[in-house]
Length: 206
Image (cartoon, rainbow, N blue to C red):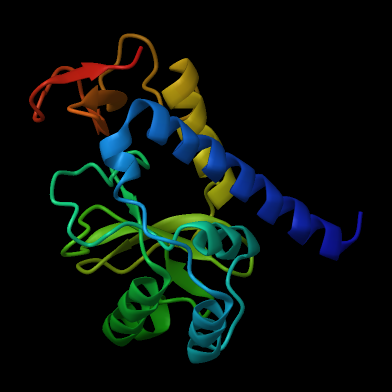
C-alpha cells in the first residue's frame, strides 16, 4: 500500500469514527451534540497550516472539516466527551501551540500541535498530536511535554466509541479498579469515577 493510500485510510477512519460518535451524541446525548461547532473551511485549515509551517495530521484535518472543535461557552462539561477532554477548534489549537513554543522552546517539537483540552473556556492541559507521526502525547501550560508515543487520533476515537457503545476497551478501568467511565447527566455525555461523583443526575452507561 502506498503512503498516499495510508494517509487516505487514516483520514477516512478518523472521520468515520467521529461521525459514528457524534451520531450517537445526537441520539443519546443531545446536549453534548449541541456543543459541536460547524466544520472549518478549507481556507481556514490552509491558513493555520501556512501559519505553522507544516501540514496538519490528515485524520485530524478531516475531522476539523466536519466539526471545528467545541463551542467555547460549554461550561457544563457537556463538550468534554472525549474522556474528560474536548476537541479544540483549529485556530485555538494554533494559538495554544504558539504559547507553548514560547514557554518550552526546545522541548516543544516542531510538528506538535495541541489537540484536546480539559477546560473549554480556559485551556490548561490536554493531549497533543505529532503531525508527522500521528502519535498522541500530553501538553500542559505548567509542565514541559513528554515525547508523543501513544495511540493515534483515530485510535482515541475508536476507544471512546467502544467505551460508550460497549462499555469496554482501552479507556475503561480494569475490573475491580476505579477510574472514569462514560455516563449520562441531563442529556450530556460525561466521564467520571462512579466512586467520586461530582456531577449531579449522572448514571453510567454500562
